[in-house]
View (cartoon, rainbow, N blue to C red):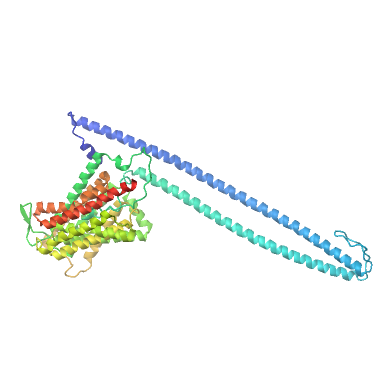
Length: 589
């Protein structure tokens, strides 16, 4: 589809050609592009496989070297331990021999002195005299042997203590070596797992090269989808890796024709969303029947109220949940694999963020339906745009991202515009007989709850692809809507439907669901071609286009002060979007 749009902008050659020739040339170019991309992908896959084999060989070599070093270390430790034991035994033998020699010399000198036949000269160390045997030789010999035994026992005790201390020290060192061995094995295993994950992620990228190509910006809740669609979550901004100068950046790689096509698709998505809002306004009853295109009157189907808004949301989601899985599979083939991985992960923090964001979006949708039923659609959508203020302040509190000077000025401008838009609604009765206070309050509450959805989406960003995230959000909102209608509500909040209007309500739900999916599809392709930043700038035209279509289709007029406030809000939100586009360029410079 993208290629067809690109070539359709160039189908006006100067010289006339037959349709067959044009089709043949287009088919040839597509085939050449297909072969080129296929060849490049095959080369990348071959290169990655080669690198993978090299990494596996390197890992095996590292493991073999580790085992060799471990065996060598154990051998060296065991040999060193044996040598140390031999040295200890040799030193022990020398000490014992020396002590025994000194003791024997001392005892022989004492025996000689006692017998009266002492030697004329002292006995030198290392020589054993042969004195005359005394009369009490046996007694002295027993004393000598007892002293020798005591000395030997003391020496053996000291040796045993030394051996015990050496043994304990050796066991401590062996335990440290085993701990280091386990740590080395864990590090090696983590390295292998990380390399395997990187290779698998690169293989998945090669299988789906367009899935990761168009990353969504930091705040992907652009106003194109802000009114009736759950915006796709965006991964948190990562530090840009400098690329070689020969490789073009993603911004320069996109052709101007693709950017133009993306802007046209974004504008078409905004038009479809504005038609959605006007259709919702027509579906809800007013004080007087609404004249569609000045041709026929349409009294509406349901009265404005909380329960009826829940019912309209449920009817719309039945159509969306019937067709969204097919659309999600078309846009992102790995959507079911990602959802299965989300269910198997057991990540409670991620689930709490996903379900919390879906609940806030559910409340925002119900409240904006209630607001559109009571006040003009253009004013309701403009007041809804309070959510950028709450989002910026919430990001400042939660993430520490302080808004710039332009951000503060935009906040002031949005606040002033909201005052200008809401003031005429309180000064004069709302066209159609709605409750102005309920409508304005519901629009403000819808914007605030939508800001909560945006903040939770940013917290969960990067952990789940935008399309599976949107599908899970739609399913959760469907469950919340069903449970809200199943639970008994009070008379003021319960649905009030006449049995005769069910065919019109079902038809209206089908129209709203088809418009929802059609806008989602156009917006997704607009982001792929032009980028989410440019698409968000186009999305700021939502309030103005809603008011314009409401004036054209059902002749819903606004006062000049409200139009001025709408313009101020649109320009302020557009300034925020342009600042997000210019911020990366300023950081790069």
